[in-house]
Length: 246
Image (cartoon, rainbow, N blue to C red; front, side, top):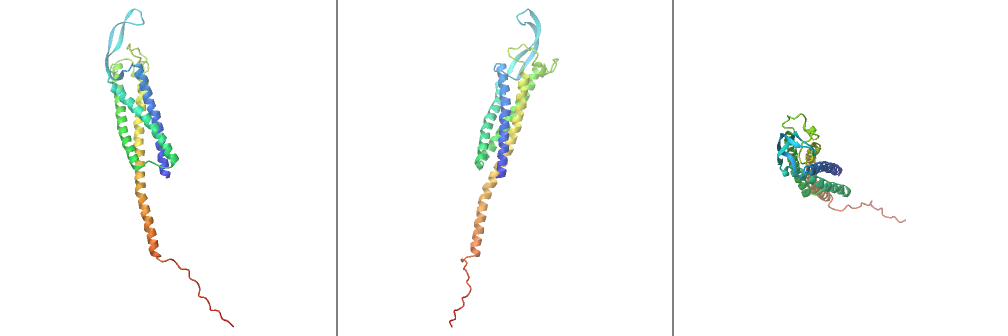
């Protein structure tokens, strides 16, 4: 029982961390989507062009600005957001279930533990794919912003440089980088969930097998004891000395 409590405590802590990491994915992506007016910066393509523009309502002047040819597919941002939202909801639910099991001093059934392991493995692959997608998408957007690293500033510095787009770009790098790091943490936590779910499944399977075996052993021992002593034991009284009358 002590092993079950330790596994439940570890799983509860991992789910709590998943909630925090999931929020760090969802909130920055939501802020970035609002700043970009619902457009996805990941895998966007564009080029830099110099032309005369009217800046600030004054006279026209020659300005080098970014022209976005095609914004990234919305599914690239929605995929990462979905993984983050599901991680938050699932982590909160499983944290409550783990605390409930700790209070009741029992664990999942064998079938429930198997479903938990299967779901953890599925989410591990989904979060890994979302992490790779977000990382590659951010690299592609940074290449567009820095013009294949030919501009005199880095991608992190470009968020403070006017790009002259119709979206707010003052914090895109901070938001997307935060979401990227948090999403890789979510992937690592789903790997932890998978390992803990396997250990709980193995323990439940061992308990289910060892339970009937222990009962069978007990029955065999009781049956052997009954065969060794088939008749009830009789109390042996010492022989009585006949009374002598004088």
